[in-house]
View 1 (cartoon, rainbow, N blue to C red):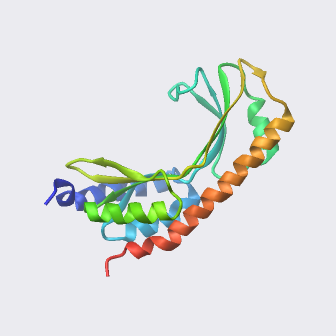
View 2 (cartoon, rainbow, N blue to C red):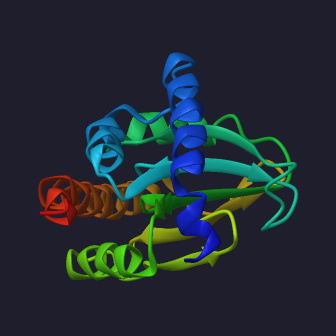
Length: 198
């Protein structure tokens, strides 16, 4: 037996403790909670982290510097142009980016067979970038990820490179991506119980 299988129940309990704390502190995206509950109710799976996908406006010293970046606006839903313009208006220094990130879930699996079953389900539902993220003695983790993503530079050091009409166009594109990935999450929520052991 692989060590991650032997350690599964202990790791699941630790993860559930962390999730309970995150829920109490309101650190879990609300619209993904029903899916997390369904996954965690399955005997052979547990969630370790999740994000239901988001649109954001971010100020960063240079692209890729997440540590020193500042969110000027962040939404786990469709967004209105006015909200984005308000966030853009806060920009003062560094690079200004408009970003879309698809949902991401990390799910511990009891066995490699369980991991592959989840992976196949996720890919079949459109989460094409899903993969087995890690295999260690502690746990076996499946990453569920979709393809929706936008990285749009808007300006730098207080100067906007684009006009409002352009921002409106990218907001519309972003909202279409959000609708798409929220639909995938809903389908995953509906289908996940297929992984329950008979």
